[in-house]
Image (tube, rainbow, N blue to C red; front, side):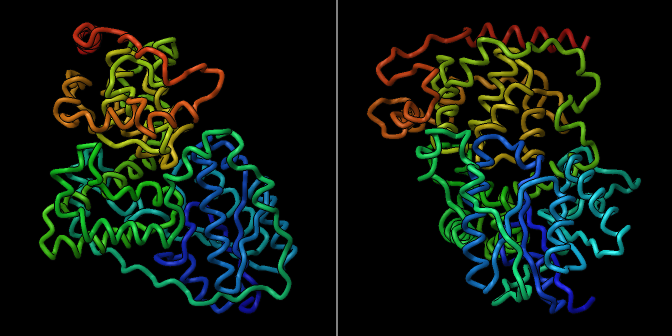
Length: 466
């Protein structure tokens, strides 16, 4: 068995360095068969995330080829594909990096049980988190429900140093056949939007590491003070790369920690944002209903509206509120949205328009190239008021007030709304033709007066509390 190949089942870990599973597999000295499976769970990804995953797979395949290896692509249910590849290669085991959502846990558990029942090796390794969700517990042995105590519990913990990338990978005597990535048409649902979004994507491990280095060298000092201003280049933008595992969290943590030790004023807050993502997955693991149901059970009867015409105007960036519309169009043009803008558009949908947060969550899942199931679910529920560590019910972001505070000169709004701006024009090149939108159309009128929307939301929230 020590000479039999190992199948390495890659998922959200498309990198070579800072990779516990890969490092241990290389150390075994066995021939390795890297494999990616387009299974039903992956097929169900939203349009932007699936397209962006395809770009990451292409880059990762090229990197593997540079090490004398290759990435085998197969389509179908995970267990069936793994059994086929094991039979074709004579491999005696499968290794993978863990995922933490309920669907992946169920799938991986079934795969592990089936393989081990056949006497095969089935091993899972640390995934895309600094700390496994079950490793961080309260003094009573439970899980954390509030962020600040979670941060206090992990900020002093040791984080393993990132493993270096291997210089070469040994392969099997005979490689199995592979699908052709282009045949999967990962970007089909993006239609003409793919060409608009492509220039804004920063793809692959090398690009992610360069992005981290540039942030730590030039922007981390002012991160805490500048990160809420969407027109400024003040954030790391690493969420895109973390989503596909093009960079590991340990690399980011150690880089940020060194910057903090060197006196960078914004470094600790940067680390807190990384741990906010950890906290989201901590909660997703322990309370998986967070992905699709109100985290707080006493919110089940809140009178949110289901999908509606106002929500459709929101999706199209046609609410008549400039900050909201600019943010929605940013997402359509670039595939991402500034975090401050995400809070504003989520508040507007769930509070001013009294629309169920899941309507917005589903749209983000379809349009974001950095879509993260836990971070997005927690973010939407935090703003709506029904989630863990939620914003107070009376916190209703005023888009106009937020614009005055965080976009005083209008630079962000001009970038995505002014017809003279390239990004503003590209929005109309990306949207579905069926929307019949054009740059010369008059600006939409506001869907609701901001003071009236706030009053309506506060009345509904007060009724819930009473």
